[in-house]
Image 1 (cartoon, one colour):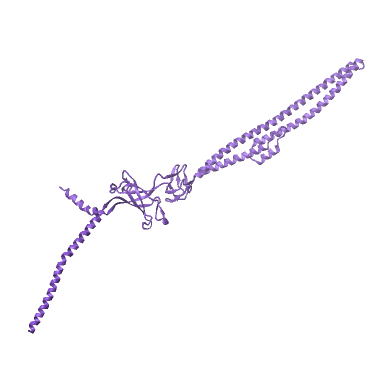
Image 2 (cartoon, rainbow, N blue to C red; image 1 turned 30 degrees about the vertical axis):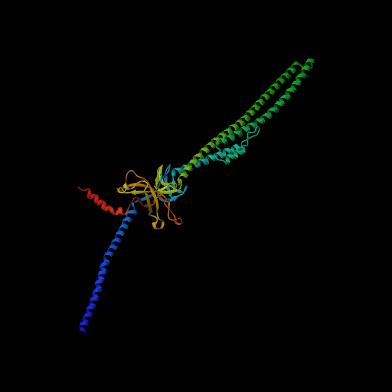
Length: 449
């Protein structure tokens, strides 16, 4: 009995264990469909959510291109009218200048010689003019006043511009003055001789009158009376000769005085005319010298306005430039900056005016300063072929801002900076991107013969 009971207990325990495993398997089998359903539902919901997200989430379509910052409008060509030799250049390409800044200095040997010649001529004319005015200041034309010959002679000695004509004038005036003085002495002598002749004639007249009375009374012979009358006639002849000689001397003196005055007036007029002519020459030479100095000043080439030097045609000293030759190309500050972008032919069909553009300037760190944005203003109607054979279309992008960076660390956008452009041409959802290969394949399959 004992063995049978023991075996029975063992069988009971075994059956109990087997029942537990069966129940566990049954419960596990019962849970598997519910887990699968939950998993499937989760997957379906996830896929549905992904499809909804892909269907409503837009992605930008971008065209990437390179570009350069350029100004709008035309640049200023800085030229020189007459040309010359480059003496010095003070700026280089890309340098910013202000209005009036010195860009370069030219040299013109011929112009330098002309300036020296004009200055010498002007100095000579002014020296002659000073001498002529000095002579005029010494001359006096008051009636009855003798000219200051000694002072004039001193002026002749002290100013070498006074030529032989002035010296001859002074000598002629001295000769006339000497003749006038001699005529004065002669007049005094003739007046004395006339006075003596008058006295002698009057005395002889008295004697003839007495002899006539005595002859009537018979006290004097007729011969004596006739002799006295003959003597009176001789004295009257001598008196007439003295008066004629005196009149001639006075007339000659008057002629010499008039000639002296005429010479003074003629010489004064000549000096005045010479001074007038010299003044005209002085003004002409001053005008000529002023024009030459203006040309010399024009050899110093200055910036007509503020801006950026785009190109320097003659950067080396000693180069010879011809008239009306462009020396510098200047982009003024007033010009609006735009980005000139080179679009490849394969992308041009997706781009239109008004598309938004994002620009990253190569010279600035994008992570620090960021970039700028803009809008396409125009597109070239035809493609442009470069010298290396590359073909592109030119797109002009207006900039929304002329600076990059924050207010504390702004950086100015300048002409010539290189930029990477991202042009937003369109937008599509993620689902459209995902279905594009399938759509393309189906279209290709469904159109086969």
